[in-house]
Amino acid sequence: MTAHTTARSAAHTSPHDTPYGTHGARTPFTPLGTHDTHDTHGTPDPRGTRRAQDASDPDDGAVREASRVGALIRGHRLRIGMTQRELADLSTISVRAIRDLEQGKARRPRPDTVRLMADALRLGPRARAALEAAAQQGRPGAQGWTEPPAPPTALHAILDRDAEAGLLERELGAGAERLAHVVGLGGVGKTRLALEVADRLHRAGMPVLWHAFPGAAADYLTSGEGAVPARAAAVAARLCATADRASAERTAGHGPAGGGGDPQDAEAVSALAELLGDRPALLVLDGAPAAAPRFGLLTALLRACPGLRLLVTSDRPWEIPGERIFLLSPLAVPVEGAVASAAPAVRVFLDHVRRVRPGFGATSADLERAAWICRRLDGHPGALAAAASWLVLCDLDALCQSLDADPAALLDHLGGGEGTGRLRAALHALPDRLTPGARGLLEALCAGADDAFTLTGITALTGRDLPGSGRLLRELLISGAVRAAHEVDGAHFRVPGLVRTACRARAVVSVSAAS
Image (cartoon, rainbow, N blue to C red; front, side, top):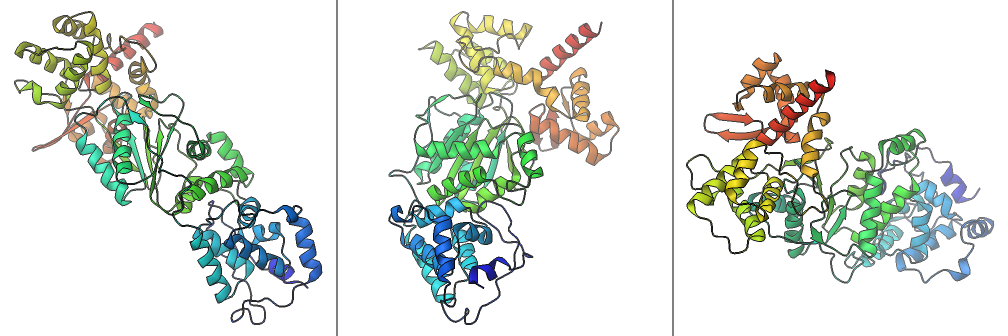
């Protein structure tokens, strides 16, 4: 009986983590003879060796110059008469990954890969140490680029988001968070914040991979070409595959959630891990789908790339373990009677005004009108930019009158272009994204006359207990339907005027349709 035949018959009872999130359950191999003290495994069977070469190395004469680690793996495998398929089955590493290592196409295997191969090959201490040393030498910087990839270039400066950018920069830079998810209403500035955080981390030396999903607001400049973006796109596509496909894969026993290991998943993760190695890196997924990602594949990705951090932007969170939900609220607006020019929302609005009317000098009356506009539009950056674009045709006084009559009338940017109407569509669709309980609460709040409310008031309004009311309120907060203000006398909440207007208009349409 050859050694590989004995190895194949080993029982499978304890789970081992694999680079791709699959879990090949097996027990440590039973020692053969002097396995624990020698680096040989007995006399190899020539027939087994010949069969291994015939079965898995048809192009043996044309094999590329192997790396040191690949040569060692191939030598140990052939010595015990094991095919690449048998090694793949025992180690839970894909055949393609083994072939790439042996042929020198891949030269930087991850530590988990080396450990699993050493276990499957049943290496003794000296051979295992030699393999680990060769793998380490093959990872000088664990990078496949001449210059670390950079994020896209923002077209406009970011204003009054330093606190938010600084917090995310510290959390992701230190690795305290590995999955930060920025959520908020469309147009609130999620992509611009992600650009700022990515730029800060890149200037500190961290490679940044950027992938924008279809429909994301691309207010930046990027080439989007080359191997690095392609590998990021491949992982993103697999990670955010449709729920139907992921379910089918799990049913069939494929993918990280199943037991077999989906080849496309393995290939996408392996390619990115080969590029990044163990070094810190940031992957930005801009405008990600609302549906939760394939959690098994996400876990496999983070395990395969131990230095990787993810920064995600979308309208609502995934609500998965390990997710750091970062709610991006609109900018602070000035209170009645305050110095308007100091408020973040006013500063941003005036910056947009000067883009359409160069040389604009704000008088005290203009500052008062600007402050009123910011309050009317809730300090929402996208709404402020759209409103300012209309100053090509009118003055501040006329703009105030139009917004007073209907604040939703000027939410579409006068310049048009991609993304026009995104905020209007987001406001209209917001109630549909809520659970029935949260939707009913929002409708009740919008129908009421009170502008501000507390959690105690919510319990009285809904008739639910405190935990139940709190969960509904949290859902409204995370969706952007409610805005919080933490003050000395406790937390207060209010429905933004734009949300209130959209909900009331929706209610009118529903009544008209019913009648």
